[in-house]
Amino acid sequence: MRPQLLVGGILVSLMGILFYLVPLPLTYFWGIPFVVAGGIMAIVSFFLPEGRGPIVPPLGYGFCVFCSAPVLLNSDRCPRCNGLQPRER
Image 1 (cartoon, rainbow, N blue to C red):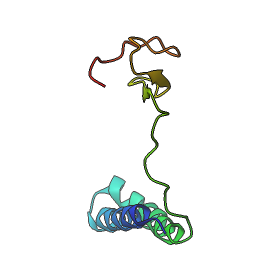
Image 2 (cartoon, rainbow, N blue to C red; image 1 turned 180 degrees about the vertical axis):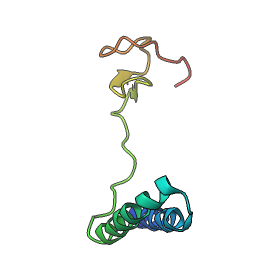
Image 3 (cartoon, rainbow, N blue to C red; image 1 turned 135 degrees about the vertical axis):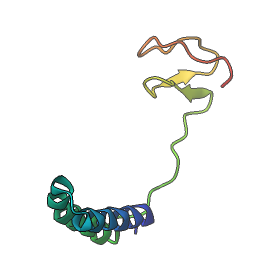
Protein backbone atom coordinates (compact mmCIF):
# COMPACT_ATOMS: atom_id res chain seq x y z
CA MET A 1 0.00 0.00 0.00
CA ARG A 2 1.19 3.52 -0.77
CA PRO A 3 -0.09 5.87 1.93
CA GLN A 4 1.08 8.97 0.03
CA LEU A 5 -1.16 8.08 -2.92
CA LEU A 6 -4.06 7.37 -0.58
CA VAL A 7 -3.75 10.76 1.11
CA GLY A 8 -3.31 12.45 -2.28
CA GLY A 9 -6.44 10.75 -3.60
CA ILE A 10 -8.44 11.84 -0.59
CA LEU A 11 -7.24 15.43 -0.98
CA VAL A 12 -8.07 15.46 -4.71
CA SER A 13 -11.55 14.11 -3.96
CA LEU A 14 -12.11 16.75 -1.29
CA MET A 15 -10.99 19.43 -3.71
CA GLY A 16 -13.45 18.05 -6.28
CA ILE A 17 -16.25 18.24 -3.73
CA LEU A 18 -15.27 21.82 -2.97
CA PHE A 19 -15.24 22.63 -6.70
CA TYR A 20 -18.70 21.10 -7.04
CA LEU A 21 -20.09 23.14 -4.15
CA VAL A 22 -18.60 26.49 -5.24
CA PRO A 23 -21.14 28.23 -7.49
CA LEU A 24 -18.63 29.22 -10.19
CA PRO A 25 -19.27 27.83 -13.70
CA LEU A 26 -15.72 26.69 -14.44
CA THR A 27 -15.11 24.99 -11.11
CA TYR A 28 -18.52 23.29 -11.11
CA PHE A 29 -17.72 21.27 -14.24
CA TRP A 30 -14.34 20.15 -12.85
CA GLY A 31 -15.83 18.87 -9.60
CA ILE A 32 -16.98 15.44 -10.77
CA PRO A 33 -13.74 14.52 -12.64
CA PHE A 34 -11.69 15.46 -9.58
CA VAL A 35 -13.86 13.32 -7.30
CA VAL A 36 -13.59 10.35 -9.69
CA ALA A 37 -9.81 10.75 -10.16
CA GLY A 38 -9.27 11.04 -6.41
CA GLY A 39 -11.31 7.91 -5.84
CA ILE A 40 -9.29 6.02 -8.43
CA MET A 41 -6.05 7.21 -6.80
CA ALA A 42 -7.26 6.08 -3.37
CA ILE A 43 -8.35 2.64 -4.63
CA VAL A 44 -5.16 2.04 -6.65
CA SER A 45 -3.03 2.94 -3.62
CA PHE A 46 -4.04 -0.32 -1.94
CA PHE A 47 -2.73 -2.45 -4.82
CA LEU A 48 0.66 -0.80 -5.44
CA PRO A 49 3.71 -1.98 -3.49
CA GLU A 50 5.49 0.30 -1.06
CA GLY A 51 8.50 2.24 -2.39
CA ARG A 52 12.01 0.89 -1.81
CA GLY A 53 13.34 4.04 -0.16
CA PRO A 54 15.80 6.68 -1.32
CA ILE A 55 18.14 6.11 -4.25
CA VAL A 56 21.79 6.52 -3.30
CA PRO A 57 24.71 7.10 -5.69
CA PRO A 58 27.54 4.57 -6.01
CA LEU A 59 30.45 4.83 -3.58
CA GLY A 60 32.64 7.85 -4.42
CA TYR A 61 29.97 9.45 -6.58
CA GLY A 62 27.30 12.08 -6.12
CA PHE A 63 24.38 13.09 -8.28
CA CYS A 64 24.56 16.03 -10.70
CA VAL A 65 22.35 18.88 -9.50
CA PHE A 66 21.14 19.52 -13.07
CA CYS A 67 20.60 16.11 -14.72
CA SER A 68 20.92 13.63 -11.78
CA ALA A 69 23.66 11.61 -13.49
CA PRO A 70 26.37 10.07 -11.26
CA VAL A 71 29.40 12.40 -10.97
CA LEU A 72 32.70 11.76 -9.20
CA LEU A 73 32.85 13.65 -5.91
CA ASN A 74 36.06 15.49 -6.84
CA SER A 75 34.85 16.44 -10.34
CA ASP A 76 34.00 20.07 -11.13
CA ARG A 77 31.72 19.34 -14.11
CA CYS A 78 29.21 16.66 -14.99
CA PRO A 79 30.35 14.40 -17.86
CA ARG A 80 26.79 14.15 -19.19
CA CYS A 81 25.49 17.76 -19.18
CA ASN A 82 28.74 19.67 -18.47
CA GLY A 83 27.00 21.41 -15.54
CA LEU A 84 29.23 23.08 -12.94
CA GLN A 85 28.90 21.18 -9.69
CA PRO A 86 28.79 22.85 -6.26
CA ARG A 87 31.94 22.56 -4.17
CA GLU A 88 30.27 21.34 -0.97
CA ARG A 89 28.97 17.85 -1.72
